[in-house]
Image (cartoon, rainbow, N blue to C red; front, side, top):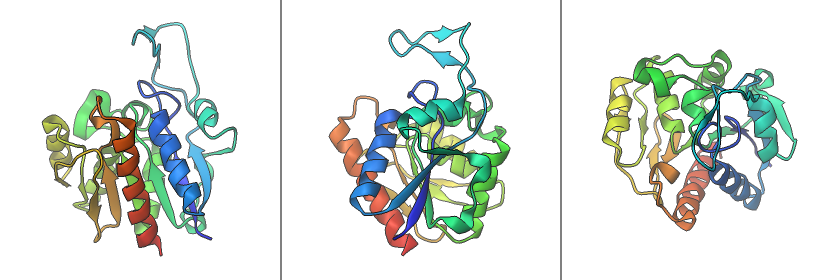
Length: 222
């Protein structure tokens, strides 16, 4: 049975991992009979946002690993322990934690700095010839890491012109895509889907896109 890793950026779409995208990914993997291990970096979040009013809390701090453990029901491992040889593929759900905690794209754009462990995991997986599935904002992180290695990966972040340009600025290729569709880069073994890049998208369409992403990645993983 294949074993895959799911990389989480915390818990909550405004400051961590997008919960519905994460759970839908885990559900599709379980339905496919795949063994899963969740990972997250053991670092502090950039900030904490109240998901009721969208305001930043100036007096709270949260740890990305501890918050991601909420989604993984406690079955989570620090990202530093990830070894590409142990897994057939990796998946990265979205959420703003991807561009705030795993890198600082939210503030620096395509010239952003990426967390060292996150960069290592993406590069080790790519160099091992194993596929990567990325949803929502996660494709821009993959583009930043692989683009810096002159790997012109082809991804989607929906129809957001600013994000599409950021991908191109990373030296990669962007295509518009609907929430229930995927872009498959067979050459570089990266599959991406917009998910909640369309905020008003019904969860059913997000689920369809994530289901296609999971299937395509698992097909690549053999």
